[in-house]
Length: 387
Image 1 (cartoon, one colour):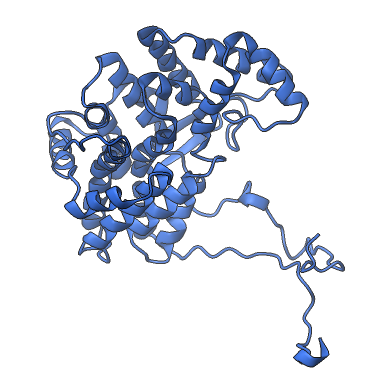
Image 2 (cartoon, rainbow, N blue to C red):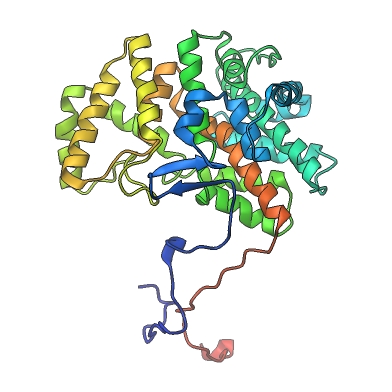
């Protein structure tokens, strides 16, 4: 126990009902998304995410999150045209990326450049609905450019300017690898973006809403979201899943590895979720596309390993995979470096963050929860000579 905690402290249950981690606490309303307990399904604006992933482009999903309805053809064309026109980074942003330490995590690069985007936007204090929507679309457009440019700079490769004839997903492959892969790979990646786009009041979204509630700007809120998502208990889990699989190495060892991990109470990333109690509704769709990646690339061992790990965890603990578990190997088979998995998550989740920022602004009250003090009782300050 810390010396600063009052040893005589007695809880006052009638006065305080402390919910560690805000578990079970309902602190606001939202029309953006929810997990429907009746169907155990995540819905965006009322649409099940698995249906959106199978039937819509990521651009359509972004439009839905921003505006509340799916676009018609003319609305989508105008939205797509605007997004593509905003993809390029300023020379200053590229210069910042080139000066950052190569050993810093790509999430740190992304966080830093988003701060710069805020510095460059003269409308930073304008939080009218139209202006915030413009900023949201600009962030959506520039995130993939930042991530791809950071990757190529680290590799000593020429930074490729974004193309305006490609979708968000296909353009990212072009900027990252210098070429667009076969359609099955691009489609699997696009599905992952849709599945990662939004998830109600998760840690990073809540962080973004807290910052917004102070009447700060959308860039500051996005930086807060990036900082929260970096943590391995949130977005960084997809990276840890792949490191775990590489450590295991052989699919035949998966079950014994998991048994040993459970016996030693080792933290296993990619399993369990605060909201879902009987399995993450996004996992079946992402697993399907990860299996397609195994077929396309011929790297079957990762999904065999997936099945072995999942089998033991479900049988022994009744704990199911979350979205990070199939996403890790899927991204690895697509060719992305592991440390870029979470920045890719940001590329998708910026849509959800922006939707929540705009919702918070529209009906704002500063988020200021209480805490229960358990420190020393009130006391007098003794003179220095008497301490």
